[in-house]
Image (cartoon, one colour):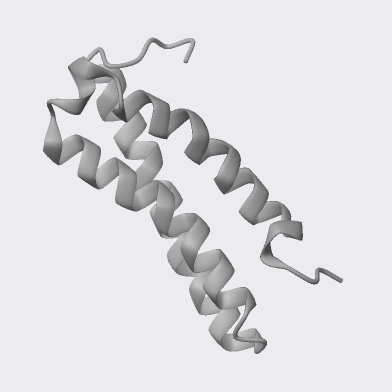
Amino acid sequence: MARTHRELECWQLAYELRKPLLKIIKRPEVARDLNFCGQADRAVNSACHNTSEGFYQYKHRPFAASLRIARGQLGETNDQLDAALQKAYITPEE
């Protein structure tokens, strides 16, 4: 049984996704696109934040609700990565 949110595999995966995305939005050519950067930053951070918040509520229903929100934010993050590819901010390999 997990004692902290950091032990949850879903949080770990969201965290691992967050690291490279935050590097991408710091690139000078990307950073000029404030709308993209703001939305991508909020979405990827929200996945981690909602997972942790739900974990510390210690009840199944609120935790499940927080995980549904986190999953939605990961979907938005995925769409932001698609947009980054279309805008040539990232390569298909990235």
